[in-house]
Length: 252
Length: 252
Image (cartoon, rainbow over all chains, first blue to last red; front, side, top):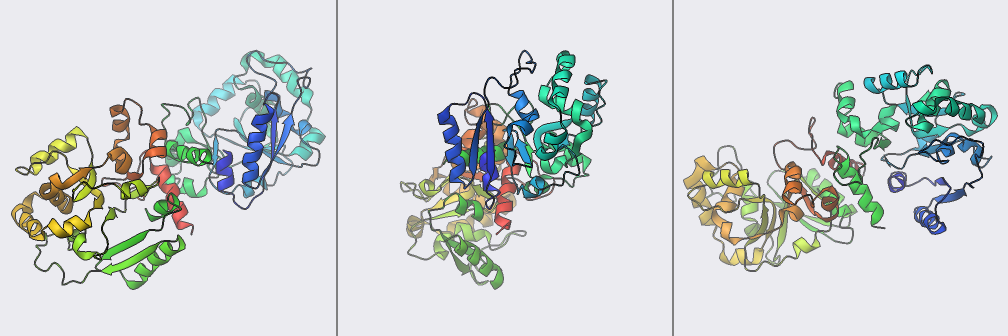
């Protein structure tokens, strides 16, 4: 992810925040050196075990799930916005326009995958919370300034207590259930292209959004789902491209 | 093809020979400038219409088909070897080792696609010429020095006269029928990877030769067949990678 971000944004200087609770110092130093070699900077934000002590922890999820939901409390106060990115991502075009998106008083900007079956499943699953779109939280632009002013973390804790049984992807579910109306739509084909749905996107665009369009216009390819392109036996339309970037990243 | 060659061989200076009969000067100048910008050089070798006048011309093939077969007569005498490359190729790793291969008294080095059905079809088609392997002439390392001494172009003309009806891909057929014993085997997985047979290669290698191996080890990906990755509606395992290189080539 980082390699593709750097390569396709050669004139940007990135100020990266690495939130974690248990990375070793030498691991963090490795990431720092890597970013520095590309002219960017990593800020090490180790979150202590005492944080979120009042927060409920789900049985197979950890404290880290709150890092994304409560980033606005953890990041330096002089940051007014930040872009969260999952690691199973390739950034294949300039990202500046996304980062500079207007928030129009929304807390977040994100994309939802407009695949009929996904929307329906989540609507039923998270009932009675009204879900018109189920946003994917793997690419999440955060309006830190507004969140600091208006968001309330107790709303999150309360939601978890009441919905323990229902949650599949807790942080993403929470985001959708509590903040659905506070999320601005991003174009999924540009900013959160789900690599599993290549044929669907082509079909839905009447053939227009083909491989050439993707490579030239899509900013973020997201390898959603259980099977990841760094694993053996993965198969998919963007496998060769992923492995290409992996090679570039490893050859440094 | 050129962009991928330059990108993945950043420390090489290529001396490229462009054999043609009808490119316009400004087209040749475009290629020259492109190569120069990458530190390499293109030699313009315009072949006059009077060449090969004694050679038979098949109805839907042109004089250009002789350029590959008779390159040893057309190229400067001080060249002792040259690597011919088809345009439907990506060079994704360093090419030096291939170029420096030992000839061991063979005229050529090439790879054949070891797919049972292909071999059988061509064996029958080119009977009574004995074809153990049907070499693909899209990647062809030429021992110019030895060819000048020992090859005889009349053999080629005679073969064409006698086999007009049988020839499907004339220059490749000729190469295989006349020179089969004079071609040294190259590893197809490294030097002429037929992108149509991804699943076959994986299967034949017991899963070892997967996408990671290809991206890290294969030198030449060859988009054989009628459907090409620059066309609409192409689909294949290396489509995204091809389009990626296309974008890089066009963004200059």
